[in-house]
Image (cartoon, rainbow, N blue to C red; front, side):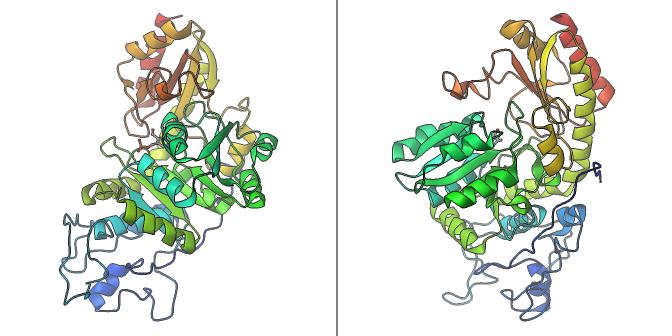
Length: 435
Ligand SMILES: Cc1ncc(COP(=O)(O)O)c(C=O)c1O
């Protein structure tokens, strides 16, 4: 597992067992015939076996929430493809399960694993990243609430906050989050409920100081939510830096294979966790069992994949930095990146997402997107395969004409884990064409 010099892994909190739901290590207890509402290591103990305080990231990714199935010994968590669960008499639930919108064992396994990976106490899995975001926003905002969002937020997040929640009386201000003074100035005392952070951002890879934002949010009596999709918990753990909620599109690095759409929320505060769980069940946008299983399988290899994503991104950035067709490169690992120092402090490495502007303008940028063979022209990111896209016309078309509009000559890469030499040759060929 890669450790960039200078990066200090944050301390982790222990996950909590959940009220009304089996806690970590529940499969061991199921086999022992123990009370599943009690913690794994004996009555009164709050210490589950798979513990972020004493196990490494890769161990948690493979084991947290994933003890072998007690009835069969299946090493892989089964896909509990069922909508409902038999009860032993009215209200006699077996191990807390009643109906799969409320809880499903495959989803529980994923939720426990995600909580462990983020160093949180409660994880919740959703049908998509935006379903997770919507649930969070509706759980903490009311008409008249104010949300601070990044000036270059993911377009879908902007659309949700501005064009859906806006109609329900939620107001927002978009601010460059790298400017802490501007964030502080945007706070509306008494009504700012949430500071929404993305770092690095999609698609311009700007970096925000999570600890600095946490202090501002705390002073304002607001919550800090960090969309950790681009970094993944392997590279960055916002809760340990003071965030209240971590948001994920698990569609991306956590799933890792471009074969599932999903989302997640992770929190440290169990009261907030209960509130979000209430909304998860009441609103109903949960991850289905098979989707939860796919994301869980992705989690197991997250660290090794992300190490390779980062190494390949370094090679691509070197190519882009020296190519005459390229105007500007956006990657927080470059010392010239304005957020480099902050990224170096709060991230283990700098990630596999790279954006750049093309000197020849929009037409040349579109040409580059059309000419790669290994970099597939497609939306989304974080999978094993390399992708290329034109944010202005694709992922970020929804912010056209808004303050969040992205440069027309911008190209975004999700650098995959193929052979680095092949990726460099593929992109160089496309860039040579527009030189
Ligand atoms: C940073 C970020 N957050 C949230 C989302 C939304 O996730 P989903 O597409 O799973 O709803 C995306 C999707 O691209 C994203 O890039």
